[in-house]
Length: 160
Image (cartoon, rainbow, N blue to C red):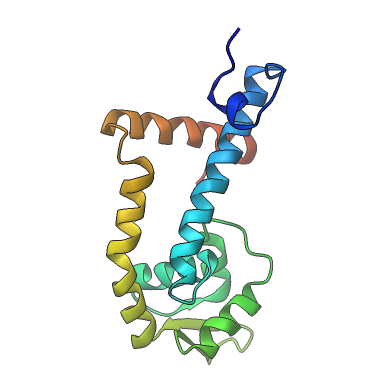
């Protein structure tokens, strides 16, 4: 039996123990390679993937947001949201404002400098998406998304 692509890449001598193991390892390996490529792009602009995600969430909302609401929308779970916001604020990409009605709530707002940085990143990020999955047809992309969502649903359950 000839080894499949992942088995070959990992220089694995024996076949995978199950189709589930092979699929899971394929997802993990692909995610790692995608994260590395995006990580390099964001580092060129002084950002991490998580910082970029916060800026995109703020731009998409179009108004200041409570820190907890931002955390709920993150693509990847970030355990230290306060530190992440601290670093963005230090670089003047966001600003904090305490809520006057509830002093415990802190609103985060995208600054003009943050918006300008996002605008500079828009085309390079879209080009990265195209370079990573642009060789797949629209039907294949929709099926890939459907299957990945189905995998997440088995872990998290349906989203409201």
